[in-house]
Image (cartoon, rainbow, N blue to C red; front, side):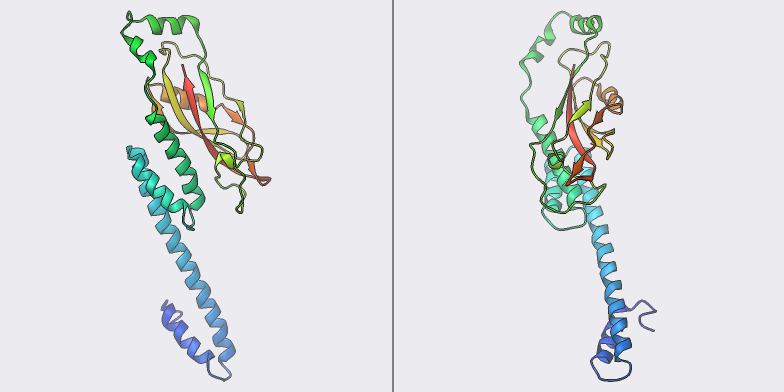
Length: 239
């Protein structure tokens, strides 16, 4: 009755007491002990997953609101533990570190030329129709030594043979000022298709155009230990 009513700890204690005594009900009690133990394990795993999701969402909110150091600390805490969202947290650590590194870069000297005659830069960009330079910022390759699950998210540094861009072209945008930079995280599916992630840097208000263009990009289908996986990578677009 205690088990059926959901009072699993009380039921477990009583069944253990029955199993500890010789008698005809001892085998049945052992079966119930295993059932209840499995139920309690499932409940514990669910609670751990919910707690991990809450912590992950809190860190994600910090990243979205610009508190990168706070987000990095929380993601690192999850990545260094053994919780159910460890691999996702490891990937976010890489993303946030890329954001911090990009923000910390010194401003280019070319920015001083903004005091030149008005409209010269935009006009030149429109006239030449020059395509922007797209640079994929792949992390240094590191072999993945832990277990791999098909379809899970893994760092691009773990991809077999390294992550390779097959098509990352982008058409010119009329009026884009030379030197304008957009840095964006892109998510790469098992088939190498791309969906845009968060814009990390946008010096000229062109983040949306870059995100739209990213949907047509293509990478080699990522695998880790020969299993199809998902990954992400930072991409810098310079106009």
